[in-house]
Length: 313
Length: 313
Image (tube, rainbow over all chains, first blue to last red; front, side, top):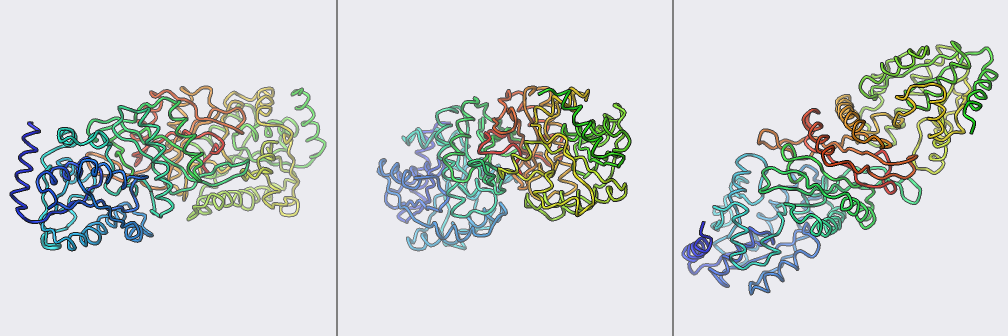
């Protein structure tokens, strides 16, 4: 594939479709929505409004970091604080499907829908890629960004048209396009991050406190494995809901268990655990139990995909 | 310590105390109750009745194996099937303390209490050791066999006296005594097994189905780690209650997660995970996900004690 030609074609196509109208898109900081943002801004300039929606489920400092990265490329991104709305929607939910639906519903029907109406945009740029379609069709998971299968008819419901400029690409091709467009390595090399964000890493109910615990654990896992698992496809921390017995200052103490997953994989379709050295595993365990309040137990996932999946929910 | 002298003293003391009366004891197959059984039978012969109570929470084939081991030494053990009574007491309970209490209560107040009354025994031989007392006093865990701290006054409640012939010993000394008394290696080298048995390895509610799942997982973990973790202090499987996402025949499938723990430790007071080779971890993961129905995910515990404990509940 000629990626320079692909970029030119998509830019031309966006210009032709949007014409003199207004477009909007939501940037998550992932490589897919980043490429769409870059394509959209080259095509439309300030007729594309890009928002970053803070749903309370982002990694530590991520909203600010993403906005700054794009500001440095001359692309303005508006940071929208919708943390309370998402946390309210998640309250009391423990089923993974219910949690996904709450996040998707809050995103499209409430927060993003409101922004679209406020701006009067008639076009929505969306980072759907071929892998999303394939996985949705296979029934493996519900991608939160495949609107049709969620029963969302955007033209009827919101009055806008969805444009999907990278729908022909699989993940590796998206990374190549990102690099070819001059996006920085922290974007084109960025490990995948799930649609439901940290809610996918909290098994059971997502409360502000539990989101904060897994956020702290994520900082540690990403810092240690960025250094020590360079070839890995993806690594992250999961917070389990059931308390396990621990021991603090010689007394019994129930506490939390964090599961670490680190995957070797080419494209997420099959995977196996990274064979981390024991020194790295012990360092992870030590930091998680001393730096994250209440954590007394740490496990490392040793299953393959299949029968496991990359994420736990 | 002169172990031969210790054995002679305890035998003499049991003979003197019990006189021409009847004694009873419950054998679990662990090294503590095995030593007590051997001491009691040397002291009292057929005036000691030994029972093995099948509580539905034993490992695969364990009740029959223990009875046969003692039969081969000329010590008769009666196998008592109390599986339904224990499972009924556990129904609906998820809290670790409630589960422990249900097992202890069913054991003493119902099953064993009934046996004591039926036999008319006035003396109960019990395998309490010094480590049990120390851990109970420290508040780390509630040993199910320290009667007093459970509020059970045996003389008042059941009309018998409790004799504790090995209460001066810690675990390593008990193993030496077991070997000195001619008990076979499967007993004096036996890894510790918790009082609440497999109920301690099922987080959340213990149903017959979940006990069976963890029993199957235990067979695999013990077989693999007996070969491949010869120096380890203890190893076992834990069944988690929350379902995680898996993938079977290309379709999403929620399933169970098994946690494997394997400890390096001298005496259970401090411990660290055995640094198993990756080939062993992958073999465990492969067998657990293919041989135990519904299991899609496997983790290996990498925490130290403290702040973890050896068991999860």
